[in-house]
Image 1 (cartoon, protein in one colour):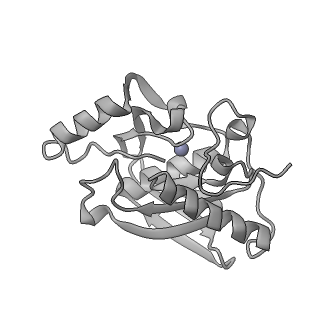
Image 2: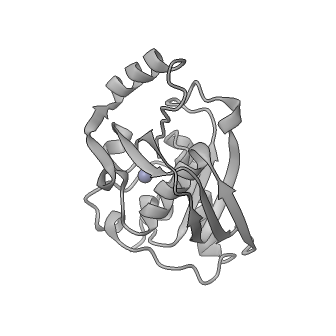
Length: 195
Ligand SMILES: [Zn+2]
């Protein structure tokens, strides 16, 4: 069944697609995949996210995108974190750092990004993927981009951040925004993401 998304709906936790292992893409340049990429970009922008994976728009294929920029939740985004739109097809993690960092995460598929929690992940990650033209590339990412990439790859395997977050840190979007406003300058490491 086709589920037409016009950058409006994001598949929510409870829907079986969020827990499914997404299928590998066999033809990255096909019209189907190109349309999914377009829909992902529209949804990411509509919902003010910095990354989104295909299962979140009800397409169970191994595609996700990232774009680290200023959003409603990330008004104080520092320029050093900004990263252009990237498209990842059939991503493969080649290595992760031993060093781990804790940072705030949210997710467009978890209560429409109204829940935030601290999640511990490797500080950097090296991945290989295909771009929208089907060309293979390798990327070593650190900082917020590394966090977003790992969060999105998890989506392709049916894993969400609440599986990994410290549940005692959970807070609502309103409380989270208050925290961000209060600690903006004091805790530059407290990363936030709506994804
Ligand atoms: Zn997410």
